[in-house]
Length: 345
Image (cartoon, rainbow, N blue to C red; front, side):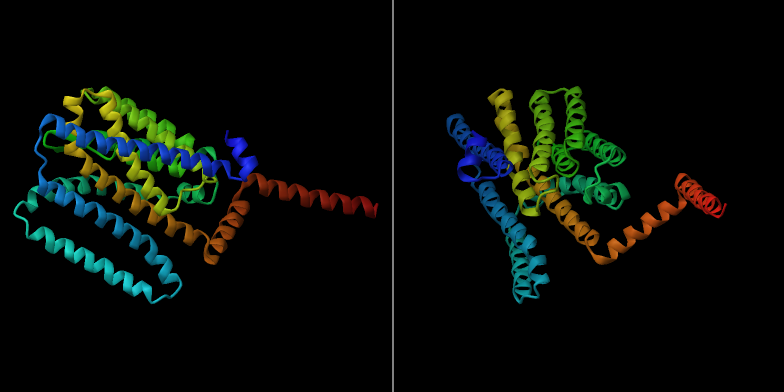
């Protein structure tokens, strides 16, 4: 079918495959929200209007801030006056948010889980951002996917996946973490040779911890590595643009919750999701936003003229310091001398 569409409409098959993945994730998110609403109606649970008020305010604000943030750097590059206007808009939104929530009596109860999630996320992000400064990570950004670089990348993300699984926060007695975010980033960054094994190892560790949600959480972890790796492959073996990565993580978090509903009894899954979904969505999206921006900055540095000059010098140093090449140069010089002697004779 994909080949037929390519031939008839001249559609890039990889682009079509990515859109199919996004469509599946969108449908799963729609089903998730319908299921949550239906469950609350059937079970007679009174929906806390104040909590929904918070939720309906936070989500649009995150979307607006994310949109403005991804556009600000482009506006600055063009020296557009909209850059200053966009900055003012973002500051205004943050100020309004702070004023809005400061008037609420249960501010600590509302923001407590989010702050705890951000604290756990910040530890992981620090290690990830430090890793991007290593030479193997920089070489991967340049398209050098050799065994050494991929192995180092795999080890770092696997350890972070285990850390994200082991150290979680409790939201009303329900564990919440950013394991799938780590695995997703590993696939988007290193491809299938990194994302899939990281997903399997992190998922196996989660399954070994047991619990009623062990199976869906394990499946979601492994699939996050697969999805990230597929997007990487279909995107010409590159980490996607920030807005693409953000939307992917946003939708995949809902897909993860949907798996919990499908593979766990409803009396367990729905209350669990209502406890942890907002916090996990918040932390996962923020983590991908920050990582995406760092990757973009690293790419800009790599593509700068000074970076090319630095790479050239490094290659020259490696060539000059390599013993085998030095010996080969000596042999070539010796052969040249021998040829000269033969000509003289």
